[in-house]
Length: 79
Image 1: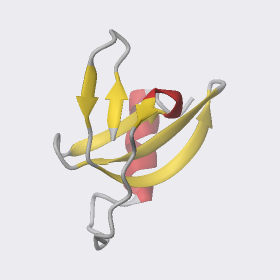
Image 2: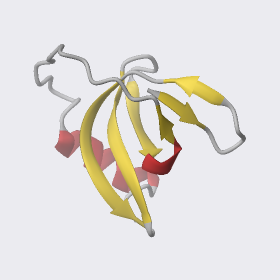
Image 3: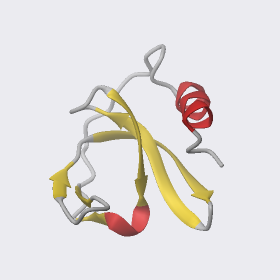
């Protein structure tokens, strides 16, 4: 999908979506960024032109929802 960052820059994102969360009054999408090889949190209202792929991915240790939630809590993205 296309994503508008806080500074207005638009980037293209390919992510393994893991969860939707309502954090601090904002809906967020949490997942594994295939481009950055890291967990990322995206504000849903900044997502544009989403394309849902038919491709499936297997669960991989270290890239599952529990891993994302633990990382988000460590970084303060979960509060």
